[in-house]
Image 1 (cartoon, rainbow, N blue to C red):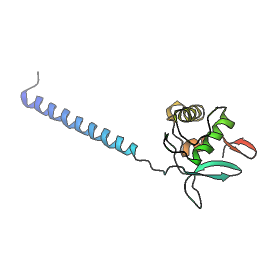
Image 2: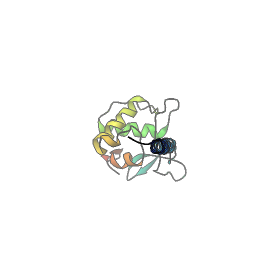
Image 3: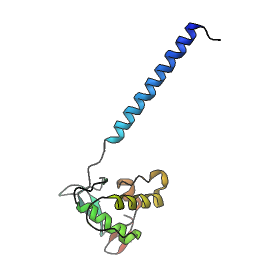
Length: 141
């Protein structure tokens, strides 16, 4: 049986450990919410393939696409075209990153990156793994 001071130390240790765990969870969830890449808003030609990109006049391929049903986007149209032509989906090429586009990206991620990386968001890892539509058909860039 523990003495009263030992129980108090044990309770204090458990409380401190809980505080550390909770602080870690809070900081990791807020860090995950910060997107390190800008939103893709255009496309870039890479060896004859249109690939979602960000910015002008020299588009960068380092960008993300996430669920967005409020605004049409040229980069999403390029992604939807690649998903349809290279990965056998039947998406409307409307520029909206809706639920069907999200699920199509997640399916492609599951195929090429594995289930652990299938989050439904298009970013640099997905760009490198999937095939993109171009002048000579489909290929990875």
